[in-house]
Image 1 (cartoon, helix red, strand yellow):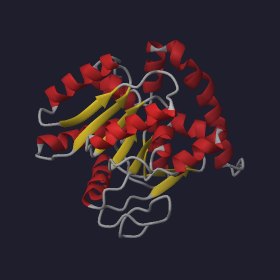
Image 2 (cartoon, rainbow, N blue to C red; image 1 turned 180 degrees about the vertical axis):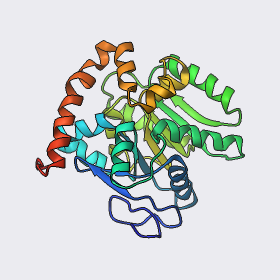
Image 3 (cartoon, rainbow, N blue to C red; image 1 turned 45 degrees about the horizontal axis):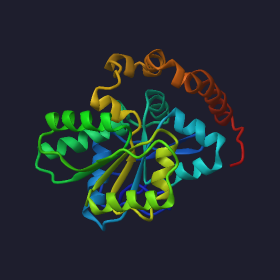
Image 4 (cartoon, rainbow, N blue to C red; image 1 turned 60 degrees about the vertical axis):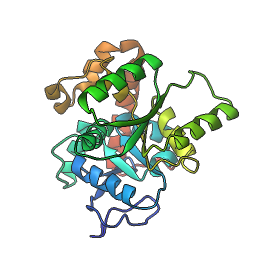
Length: 272
């Protein structure tokens, strides 16, 4: 990496900010950042032209899907900032020589950005996805914790494929809100693909797939204690809480990922 700033996927340099390195897991790019680094990057984006930037909270599930889908691999490669979401990725980053003592997924980034509002920041936020009930409770709890947080809008789209007219109306609603940040909770891989597919239409500055974070912040889903998360066992608690929804991910997809990771580590790669 150069001292000017971290590289974008297209090879350009994000100047004027901290310069995190990067490493790859199964050929998927991950930036070696901590929360302060990530906040510095997004604040730098806010100071520049109002162009869209896509943040990926990259975890085992994302990489496992990218291994199976060339289309989704391109979505992951299109991220301007790829956060090391999950303790196993922190462990691997440390093995590669980076100092990554703390978690840095989309949840941690959102909390840090929201906290800026308590310090006088005027950034505004749009929350897209999930259910009306979760969004209502999310708003109540966020404003209780961050009373100066500017919420530009919230919207729960129907749980079915959208028509072209509906999709256009949703994008227009988000753009007209004037939001700086767009947090999307449509589930993985749908939310990342949605952000990638709409990157040329959105006028927000930062978009990130938030997934279950809406549920955690709203109190609708139990969050693992910190000691469980830092031992890398959060997946086990989530499996116990939602076995029918998550068993395929954790009991079928994750073991397959481990095999693929070992193959890549030994130099055996599957062509994208």
